[in-house]
Length: 217
Image 1: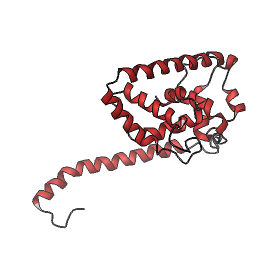
Image 2: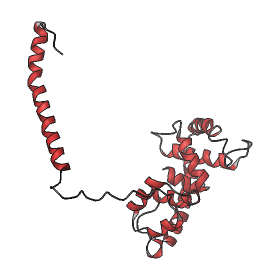
Image 3: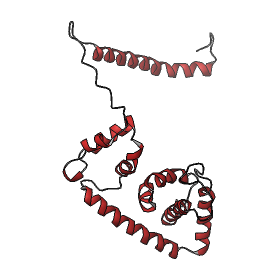
Image 4: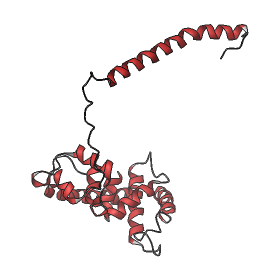
């Protein structure tokens, strides 16, 4: 807001800004006019019926089957994602659906082909884990392992899947292994604090180290 008697330098700034302000106000007026015209309908013509509400119930096994075609092929991936977005997934079905949502499978695979794909990827993961551990320098392996371990031992320890004594815990060992493998395989990114918070629920739901690694990637 200009003062009653603006200083010379302020007067010059106001003069420069005035055309812009006028143009902005005019544009706002034109936009409001277009919006009013778009929202209006002819005299006596009722508005279009409202869109049906999106699905709000969690995705069930019966719902999932409606998105699958012959041989268990996923035919409507976009609709599946929308359903999960609006309603979530029943807990017992997360192990299946999360693999679709996280792009573990190439498109168009049948149910049997998906199982074969998982077996193949599990073999690839085992080979990659062994190769990276053998190829890494001892100092690098110790540094990455220590950084991962620091988070692993305090991630979701109140959850039954990760609870119990730390020594010899198979699920903590699996979480340590998949995060270490990821860090060694991505040296520019390596391990960042909080990655364990993403990987832990994947491992707890899938209950499979190789599949959790695929989903994490």
